[in-house]
Every structure is written in C-alpha cells, then in structure tokens.
Length: 245
Length: 277
Image (cartoon, rainbow over all chains, first blue to last red; front, side, top):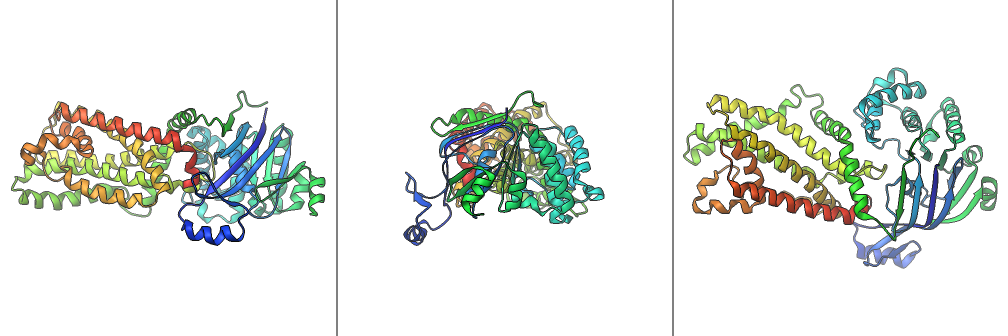
C-alpha cells in the first residue's frame, strides 16, 4: 500500500564553494535564522527542520508556503534525491516525479527517443520504452512533433511530454512541482482527468504550488511550510483559512 | 493493487545502513547498463553532430598523431620506424584510453548535476557511462593497430588474448576511479586541474613514447608506477610477450587498492553526493 511516513525529518545544505568567512560575517550577523554551524563548523542552511507527517493512500496533498519554504526540497527528499541528516523517512510505492520537466531529457533527441531514454532511466528495456512511447504519444497529443528534436518544443509542449511520461508509468506516488501549470486549458483538463483517475486508484499526489485555485480543486489536504518547518497541516479549507489565503 | 511488489524506500538517519545502500546502488547501476550504454553512445554522437566524418574523427586524429610522433621519435631514439611505430601505436592508444578515462572520471558526477539533483538514480550509472564511453572510443582506435601491423608486417601472437584480462583490469580501474575521483572532484573543485597536471607527468614517466628497455637496469622498477603496470598488461600481450609476472601482479595489486579505496569512500560519503554537485 502506498504511503509516506516522515518523523523529525531534517535536511541541511552545506554552503560549499563560497568564501565561508565573509559569508559568515555577512549573513550570520544579520538574519541567522536558518543559517547555522554544524558539528564540523561548516555553515549550513537548514532547509527542512523537524518534519513529522504521515500520508496515506488516496490523499492529495498540497504543499503551500512562500518561496524558499522548502517545498521543492521536501519533494526531492521524498523522491530519494537527498539523504536526510536527521530523522526517519519511509516511502512505500513507485514514485513518479514531475519536479523538473527537463531532468534526464536530451534536447538533441526527439520526443520519442526521450521517452525511451526515460524508460531506461527507470530501469526498463528499450522494447518497453518503445511501447511506452506509443502510450505517451496518445496522451501528449504532440502529433508529428513527437519525432522532432525536443529543443524545438515550446514550454507547453515540454510540459505535455513530461507529464505524459511521468503519469504513463502509473506511479503509486506522484510528486509535482507547479511548473506543469504551463499547459494550455485543453491540456489541463486532460491532466486533471488523469490525475483524478490516478488518485482514485489509491495513489498519492503531492504537489507544491502557489496557485490556491489548484489547491482547492485538486487537493484534499494541505501542508503549509515556512522556513523549513510545518506551520499547519490539515484539510485544505482549514489550512488556507488560517493562513488567510 | 496493480503492483505485485511495492518498492519501499526507507532511511533512518540514526541507522544509515550505508554499506547496504552502497551495495544497492552498485547493483542498480549495473542493472541499468542499458541506460549507461545509451548515454555513452549519445555522448559520442552529440560530440560529432553535424560533422561529415563523425566518430571517424576519433580514428583519424589518432592516426595523425601517430604519423607525426612515430617518425619523429624513431629518429630521435635512433630506432627503425618499422620497429618503433607498431609499438607506439599500441602504446599511444592504450595511453589515450587511460588518460581520457581519468579525465572524464574527474567530471563524471559534476557533469551529471542536472540528473543527480532532480531524480533518484544509482550513482554508479555515471561511472559505468564513463567506462562505456571510453570503451567506444577505444573501439574506434583499435582498428589502427591492425592497419599498422599489416603495413609493417607484424604478425599477431597468441599472447594477444592476454590483452583481454588487461582490458578488464583497466575497465575496473576506470569504474573505481570514476566513483572516487567523481566524488572528491565534486567536493573539492581544485582536484581536476591537479589530476590533469599529474596525468601530464604520468605521460612522460610511464613509458608511453619511450620503450621500457631503454631504461636499462631501472626497468624492473617500472611496475611500481600503476599507470605503467596497467598499460603494460594490455600493450605487452598485443606486442607478443606476456609482459612478465611482475607486471601482472602489479596490475592486479593496483586495481585491488584502487577498488578498495573507492568502495570505502563510496560507502561513507554516498549520501553527500547530491549536496556536493
């Protein structure tokens, strides 16, 4: 059964490749809120602090909060990109990640070749990738563009392709950053249908966004982050009302 | 549920299970050899995109280098060209492969930053990509050996089969150094130029353009140099000798050392890579 469980989860970004001393004087003195020193005396940014939550099957969770609140970092941590410095994380289910549409894409390859490449990234074979490409082609609605190099694609076309790829692999958990809103109205309708189907199949959706319309329409639960901490967690209307959004 | 087995990804900072995670990474990376191969191939085709000769340039530029150096150094060393050029061909191709692998190794993780920070993927895939890319380049250069051997009437010898374990050792070293150098070069950005200058020194001290026997009574000490040992385990068999037991012991010894260091480093710091790149 798909599920995400986090307990006292923390992520810290060390600030390498900077002049640490001047940085220390400049920033620690002024704000100092999220910058701190770890045990090795390095300057780190506390990106996520002490996060505890459980997300069960069928939940559609919105991550809301200002820029730099840690929304994308949390998505990446759940995806398995970052290893937490403290706390526990347990993720059950295959993950589909829509965090950066360009990740793992090769601009010189065609849309179809990119689908096959993505399949290889997921550990599938080329034959499976070709089959997947057919499925993606049907949904993305790119027509002849599917066999053109993707560097000629518009932003919206990239989004269509990325979205179709990530959802075609029927993930148990779909992680999305808000860039996918670049799709046109027709596509957004198709995307919503697909997401609804995906989530009613007992899967989990987690989406980071600033668009409260999307939150109200698509999500059942909201987690409000600020400064790497959870400020509120609960039903969408309640969390948004408390935050005055 | 549509999935028979659900993948579980669990991490507990209090009990990091580093060795198991590193092993999973290695298994996952090797299982994705198709991906590493596709990426390695596109690295080569993208480099020569739009060029008429395409990857044949790899062969051609080696041929030009050999033509220029072969005649000049045969003259300088006062050796007959027909005795020197076949040897130099093998020597230079093996050196180029080794040198390019090490150079690629230093950038193998920083160059994949976009992927590393966006999606979970075994890091060993990037090391495998370096090895495969350089294997493709070597495969473009090896026909030159056949051409030069044919022109100068050098007959292949049964020992040439011994070059296969030699290549395997070099591939293992390439893989291990991609992990090790890839990691320390991601963390400390001064390492790539240091490695670059060391490789320049290695070119002159590792008997690439001069023959080991020119060294006289110093020759037995050459296998202390890992670059020489690894090269000789490929070059000597192709040139018709076994290379001697000492060379092979040294090649195995250095491979084992490098692999052990890389593995220890990988187990300990694997979790930090995403923060370093």
